[in-house]
Image (tube, helix red, strand yellow):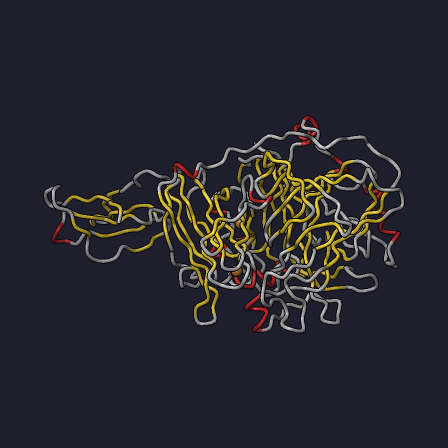
Amino acid sequence: MGLPRRTFLKTAALGAGSLLPTPGVSVGAGLPVPPVFRGGTLTVAPASLSVWPGWLTSVLAINGSVPGPTIRLRKGERFTAEIRNGLPAQNLVIHWHGLLAPAAVDGHPRQEVPPGHSYHVGFDIVQEPSLCWYHAHTHDLTAEQVYKGVAGLFLIDDPERDAKLGLPTGARDVPLVIRDWKSNGSFAFTYNPSMFEHMWGYTGDRILVNGVPDAVMEVDRGLWRFRLLNACNARVLRIGFADGRPFQIIANDGGLTGSIASVTAFDLAPGQRAEILVSFADASPGATFTLRSLAFARLPAGGGGPAGPRQGDPLDVMSFRVTAGNDGTATPTSLPAPRLPNPAHSIRTRSFQLGMTNQQHTINQRTYELDRIDFTVPSGAVEIWEFVNQTANLHPMHIHGTFFCVVSRHLGGVLQQPLPTDSGLRDTVLVYPNETVRVALCFGPRHGEFLMHCHNLEHEHQMMLNFVVTDGGTPTLEILEVEGKRLCRWPLSAAGWQLETSADLLNWSPVSGDPVVRGVYLEWTEPEDARLTRFFRLATV
Ligand code: C2O
Ligand code: CU
Ligand code: CU
């Protein structure tokens, strides 16, 4: 993946850095490639890295690296890892963003472990090749831990397939983890959002790519594939080249989209991924091209307040220095498309109002509560979820446990043109101010408790809901005799079902008294006086 090590050292030496590059660790320039990880232990712990030449910066590293190692596996393989919390004073849990992971290891904040503890993760890769990522999802600490470095790529790839499709592979297939950083006059990852930044997001004034500022990479005049992740806490990147050169978007969160959209710029929101093909065939050797986040003004304010770095500020991402060669590869003319949920088969529409209530970021007037299940979704059925942005803010909405397709965008009741990034499967969609975005989804094969939230990480801890995906069938009700008492128990995941009782199998009513949570079951004890004279069933609420 990425640049061969030889090129890495050479480009690193071009920079102003005086420190020797260490493999897999950030240096002052060049484009470092994070180490590859295929299974084993991932330890999150404080570290000092040379992010800026001449400085050692305190970070939260994964196996000593920021960004963390790139997990690389193929469809059909099994991912197994031991996650070690080496943080001195904070809990930790890791979420596999874009991976269809079982709910039990998806990284729900309730799965977090205290300092010094580890937990095991193991699941099969059941999805198509795509660029995913992983990051901290700790209760109330996602923003801070991700900002300080707890994030890395999770690449499901298939170079043979890609070579057959005519896509650049190997050293021409370059993942770019893009994030911003707020310099604050010091070379530290200081996370101290003001009131204003809690409102709009913690946006920085500099960009780091694969962990370094001012990254420079040598490219020949052939075709290149860049896989972009927006790992910023809050900044929406408007990706484009300074010279306005066109490029092709071929993939997003869910992998290849089936379309080859030629654009000069597109918006990449926090959490989103996009893959682009870029050719420098027209450039003269020695020329330099800058990839930027272009200026935009879709917000009345944003970022660090009137004086600070704002959402929509233009920023340089990295540059490419062109060398003489050319591999002669042409842009492919067709690529396979994923199967999308069909919105015409939708069984219901759920509406989520993205708003502001009592100075808090809310979904349907609610802020997040760790132990509250907000709704239940049957798997195997197509639903439309509608995000209604009632604010002047940008909200990249992310759903765990599935992919979706963007069905429509409305602004002031008027249907908008789809964006070039709206094709294919996504797990995160950017909802612009006052916009209504509809997506179609269908859960499965994973069941259990998942999250839906805004991926502006300053909003996330409030603007988040828990939902439970049921297996679509009736949950099993078990009736047991325990120590002379009769117990009814059923899976905790059966939210939306209630226990009913009847004396004659004709007239049913809900049982009185609340069931107790015991492990993965809800449990209800039959009162003495009713013993053996009644029938029970689970019924949908
Ligand atoms: Cu990338 Cu729930 O997050
Ligand atoms: Cu996710
Ligand atoms: Cu938001």
